[in-house]
Length: 441
Image (cartoon, rainbow, N blue to C red):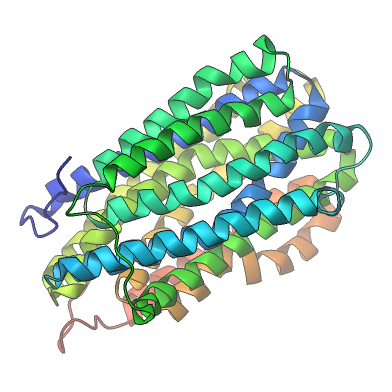
């Protein structure tokens, strides 16, 4: 499939051509996570709690791969914008090489330190017994995910978001189909979910190997200096993802102190449903970021500002609508995962609280990708670390003693809106660096 021309004068059409496939791809990821939890929920509260407790750990380890991928996609897009196709291939080769090293280290570390990791997360008793065999297979899937993430970002950086969407559809579609076979058909229980994921990933990585065998995309190993811009953009994002994931892990660990597996299940279900919106939103932002990076590489301030303005309005409008729907229909959504009345009531309340944060998340994310595109990693890092990092935990300390597990959701919601206000201030007060006069967004 040919790469899309990032200099297309019709910005809105280009934005949809890049953003929608990436959004669809991560929508499938969100759907897969929801279906996965629905299947595992049929096994009982302990397996569901173990799945929800371990899911953020995979995100934590993949954070370095995500940061590397975002940095590489931004560098590839800028290289293409500057007319240097060979440099884009060299960046691709370096990114894949580093991703492979990260994947090997991740798998080895998880297999060697499985029990300490599980105990640190708060797994104990029956939950620990259920989680242990699942993690032994999940470790390999995390390594494969790091490679797959890298391939996705590199394709998006070239404007080929449609192929990325198709590979994600293949992977998550196969995973959803294989889940009931491995979990119930082969009677593997919770580990069956991990085996289904691994089989789907192996097939998808074979497709990516074919994709990058094309001469125009074929990776080559460039000089180490090319990693500089990649790391400057990517590592702050990796830190942001890591802090966010560590916070999720800590919040779930904190929830175990209220009602054990019941509180973990309620909070985990509410968070997973919020991710059904957040993942497509992040996919859209990832898909359109190369347009911003390409405009920055060409020093086209007007195109940069117009693209960012469109992204802001559309993302904010969609998430506001979804926040209202989630608030109104929280209980039917939660009932898909659990039938226990206590967990159902708690998860419904938590979901309504978290849904209010969705428009704020959209605003902060849009400003953050604009900072990444213009190689302003420090500002992007400060903003990215705000909602689940330095803003969140003072609020947790203030609210949890009085509201228990509801205090966790309230803290997340309030932190998201404060971060959104900071993003708005950044947008209004930071001059555009593409030209001396600047362009107002």
